[in-house]
Structures are given as structure tokens and as C-alpha cells.
Image 1 (cartoon, helix red, strand yellow):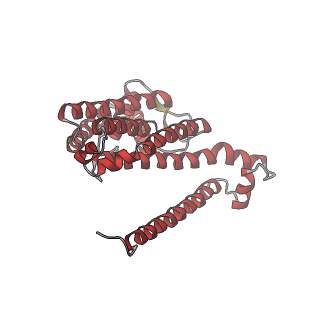
Image 2: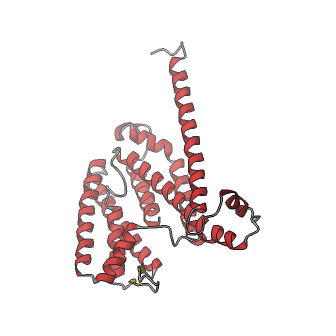
Image 3: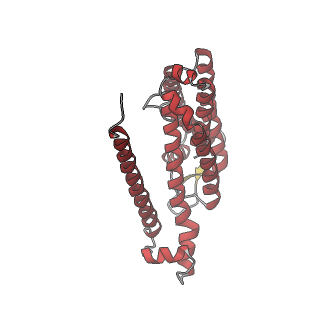
Length: 275
């Protein structure tokens, strides 16, 4: 095949250009949505006031507190969580060579949900809050998060253990994840069956997920881990591209397929569980 006419490089350049424009458009749309999220709420704040609040120049201390202490960390937490989950999903799809690869397909999210339900019912981290509406709440966020994290890592450990025994083939890892997802879903339903109304409501509340309690501290933890894991993924991007071409091809190019696949799985699991 000859490329003397420059046709293929020109097509590739146009493709990269279209993709860059699309990414830029999405970035601007995300910025607009962040501003809208900070502006809208029980206390509507005009866009201009929001922009001034970013520079502590709005002239209204109350509005600046709402922007900086409540709404901005919540909006940024949603953006960061979306970025981390997107990166984790992309890497899982690459190392498994399967577009269905995700924390849900591999049973990791189901394991985290079971861990949260276990903490709420067995460890007593879910009770009725003291709000005027009597909303159910998870009183010990960190204990519940730790329990969800441990169970999600346990699920990842089982998948990696099975993959070592069977040669780390993507098919085996997918099927193992599906089986684990069904197992942990059954376990969660088992706990919900014996839970009282307050515990059941707290389990459902946690499973839905929200950013209403996100502060700068939680945002810092999520952002720091997302940056570190994303940097690790970028450093191994060539290895992931080689694996996409097939395990034999990757081995021929000098890639330690099993090690890259297992470490990528572990990093994606860690990031998903923490988010």
C-alpha cells in the first residue's frame, strides 16, 4: 500500500481535527453546566454574581458562602466523579477487549453496594436523621465507604485470582464478574429482606448516590486519586493499545499482558470504589 498521494494522512488529520473540536465543544458545555449548577437552587444566583463570587468580588458574603462552601464543591465533585468513572470504564474496556467491560459488568459496583448495605444493617451506620422531614441517612459515611471499598476490592481480588488460574483471558474475567455481580446482588437483597424500614431506606438512599454532602475535603480525595490513576493509565496507554490488537500481538511487542491487565484492573477498581 502506497501513501504517495497523502490521502490517508489527510483523512487522519481531519479526523483528529473533528475530534478536537468535539472535545472542545463538550468542555465548553461542561463549563456552562457547572455554572448553571452553581447558579440554580433554592437561592437563585445570577450568572454574573457567580462569576464575581469566584473572585470573591460579589459584594455579598452570604452568596459567596453558598457558592464556595456548598454548590461549587458539589458541582466539581460530580465532574471529577464522571471523569474518574469514564477513565476506569475506558481502561476496563481496553484490557478486556470488550465494549461491555465496566465496573457494573465485572460486579465491582454490586460488591460495593453489598458492602454499604452490610455496613448499614450489621455495623449500624444507617439511622433516621434529625431533619424535619425525618429523612433516612447514613450517619457514618466513612465506615460505610470503607465497607463498600473493601468488598469491591474483594470482588476484584476474586476476579484477578481466577484470571491467574485460567490465564487471565478477557472472557473468563467477564464471566467471573457477571457471576460475582449476581452473587452480591442476591446478598444485598437478602440483607434488605431482613432490614427494618429505616435500614432499608438508608440502603436505598446510599445506592442511589448523590453529591449533596461533597465538601472540599472529599473533592480533594477524589481529585487526587483520579489524577494519579489517570496518570498511570496514560503512562501505560501504549500497552493498552497493544492489548487491543490481541494478546499474542502484545506479547510479541514486549508487553507483559497479564501484569498490565491485572494492575489496570486493580487501579480502575480502586478509583471506582473510592468515587
